[in-house]
Length: 88
Image 1 (tube, rainbow, N blue to C red):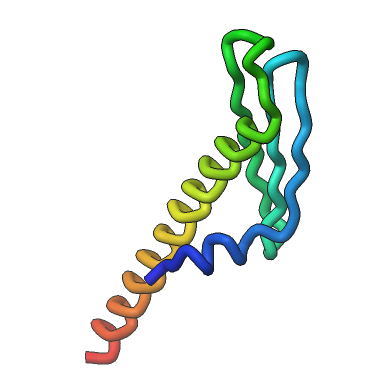
Image 2: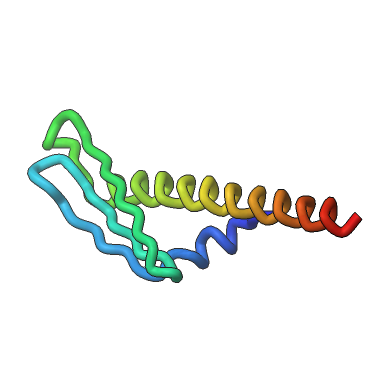
């Protein structure tokens, strides 16, 4: 089982920056050194808000961590079943 606490706990550091007039980039480094980078942008620079952009990016980063942890969980389950088959 993967929990929200695990997902949140994997994020060690984040760097937020504005690119141009309407794009936010967030670069997250995870506890194991793996990095995930996401961007968000608006159409009109007048509507740009780095805080909103970074929140959107963080949501995408956390979704990717969920995906990656889900893969690892599935792999562990598969390996466990393979070991059980070999023991029988």
